[in-house]
Length: 359
Image 1 (cartoon, one colour):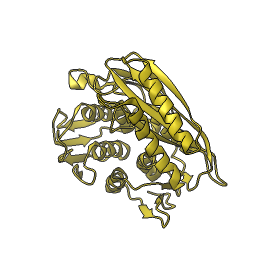
Image 2 (tube, helix red, strand yellow; image 1 turned 120 degrees about the horizontal axis):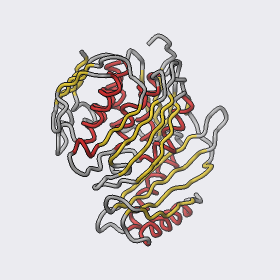
Image 3 (cartoon, helix red, strand yellow; image 1 turned 180 degrees about the vertical axis):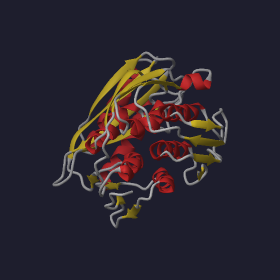
């Protein structure tokens, strides 16, 4: 049994989710201890417990310690991942309304089901756009297109938005299983920005708020010579919420491929809509100026598919995050595969795997 220290590195739910995914894929039992030990609310919270139950469902795992607040978990897969129709609801685990991120639940089971021998359909309920997690819009526009080039076929449909703290969102996902292995990918360079766009969205709030976010973001980006199409949207939801979600798609450079970077910021009581827009623009422009093709969030999420792909993969990112370093560490506990992170002289960073076909 592989024993993982859940407080290692970034020390959050990322350790748990990566360990679960790799346990399902490799069939190796794992014990995760000190889960989220350094957090203000340590142990399994509703979204983490939902991820545990989701991973267990797809491989008929035997699980011990799967209760709210638990800081130790034993997970023993009962077989290979099985395609099918699944519904995972963070609200059920919380026994109340919850904005636990459904995107993190999806990431836990996405690769196992993508590599299963058959198509799967998921319904996920909870928070679709919440802080400290990739919004569903990011998965749709930045993460899944890269996975598609690696051989993963998955489509998401955002049926209902769910902002923090009320949640109440719903996402439907179709994952086309495959029997083969993932293809390597090379994201070394990027071309000029091909398109910059986004959505300024609110639920149960006045229409002037998304309009102000949209207008301010367009102006900030225009000052940096980036013309952006940002749609203001007013939606109904389980509770009030606001956020802006920006994307920059870069044209392929010679020998490269199109890659999209994504950035977001969320509103809160007392924070002007203009400041929310400026926060997302600041992150987008900081990445844009580095010249790196892969944003820090995408680099973190590419660790597992790159480690699982046959052949050599490379991704150059604008920043080495603790999430990235932690994800690499957990992956090394399960897979005999060289993964390295190298700082470049220009401030960029390289995430790479070696040519290796018998991992």
